Image 1 (cartoon, rainbow, N blue to C red):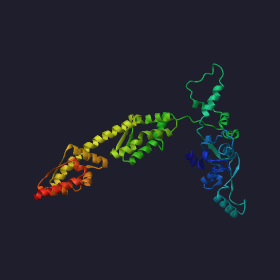
Image 2: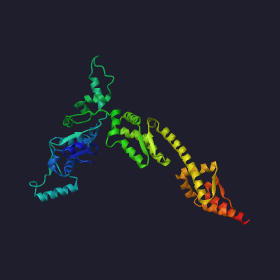
Image 3: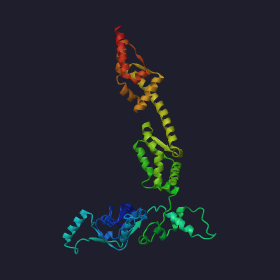
Image 4: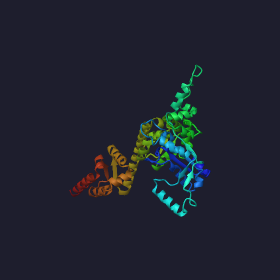
Length: 397
């Protein structure tokens, strides 16, 4: 709607009906809609008189039976009715201090009403478009239609759903819903939008400009993880979102439920790609557990090879050989996992004095091969100090 209005050069205003109340009460004044239209036209009152006002959530202002005054229901309908008819609206709100100051300045510059800038705008040619979910309206129409069916030849269509009866909506149904006859009478053109099907939701994910699927790809890219979604997974998401009965919002509900844990777990595991299949959509927790287990096994093998390569480089650089038994290897790998470090990073942080200490021991005792124990990995500073002290004793003996 906004794109169409921009294309034809018409000022356009979109607002939510729930924020308005009857004039004089807490809340926004419906006349502000027309003033916003003038602002959208950059102050051109002549252009604003042919603008478009789109009011969403209009079903929320349907009046409810109550003992008090309904200032956000019937009151808003009454004031909107005045706008939708031929009326003049002041460009300056009575509750807007800045607007009042501008009015005084305009009056001073114009020397009065005649010859000055326009102070009102006429609503005769403004196009008003309203929309809403109209919850429970289908039930009212269904009840009316079925109660009017008489005789054996008026059997119900078994394939007809409750929402399908909305296409038979009449003015009296809106009145029963809570709208004033005068207000609903000013809206002669009525269009019923059918619920989005699974095919519609699938197309929204694949081709819409602000696709939620594209947003999730960008989120995962930010974590350094490439997100690849298979066609059968897209279809499954669309079918689950259709069951949510919340329109396109259901896509966000399903994707967030499926991918939320992946988004936070995969980066810490060092996984750089996620292939979303139908199985991932159907059972995300199990698929995540399997993926993390597979990643742990692969990373363990890589770390074991890195540890062997580090020992080779250490011997080539220092002339000293370091050996590790299985418990020691497991302890080093566990430390790499817990601190999210490579083998080189762990030795550089936790065992930075290892080469110097072993060189002292070798100088004192002539030993060139050292077996690193699990206890040494857990407390390298204490263990290395004990080794060096013992080597001095042996060297002086």
